Length: 382
Image (cartoon, rainbow, N blue to C red; front, side, top):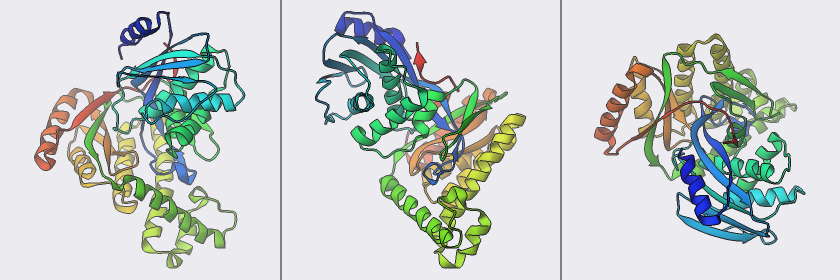
């Protein structure tokens, strides 16, 4: 990302020297649709980021400028309302949360931009929220703890952006660590780092460039299906509160009392948590090939049991599976479009990308985008 571009634009607009903050996007290696079931996820921060230049302006007014949209807005700290432009809400929401948390803010100026591809499922919105929360904490000496920053950023998305996201994206953005994945327990928010020593392999994302309209309605349906399964198990096991508490044996006890679809959904989530925990053991052993097999297993479950994949995603994972230079691949994110994440031999990545692009264009008539990413540290001063 071009830090100088952001800083120069700030000086041009506001005439002072800003503080620079970078806040990364994220990938998720394994553990999809487990978050709202109180399960585990395994994200990592990446070297695609949002960069914010900020400075106090000794007033009650906050001035924002988006480099990517080439648009400016201003608002008063005492009169915060969601903006119909969309993009300012990620920062407005954070300001609102900090003020509601009892923190004293003053007026500030902010220029921001980034190289996180929009719509690719790499959490540009969480990166912006976390960057804003961290920048304001630094600028006004608020000393907000990291976990609290994460919660404010998540709440900002709920309230001002209107998206009921889980906590994984913001957590990964703030807590990222170079060359490590983060195993996050979405029930307790306990977390630990696992080494991501890829050796001869590297992470390549293949962007389908599609987003099927099913995504949001089916997401809500999946949540309800999981809740219905939990309710049935709870009748026999009152201690159960979420699929995190359910074993395959418990699920089998109620198999005849639930629909085959609900059984499939619940079974996927239980198995995905197990795949993730075993995958972390494999990372500790440095066994990337075996970890890649867990990724393929994850995709199969998402496609056949949870049914949130689509032909484009399945096609790309199939291509990867048939290529001996790729040791693991799966769809990443909510589903019905977005990216696949692939572990590819570094010295064969160009050939793999070229083959995938051509095959995808031939099959779907779409020019695919690709991103090579490295795992990096979380939100911080530049």
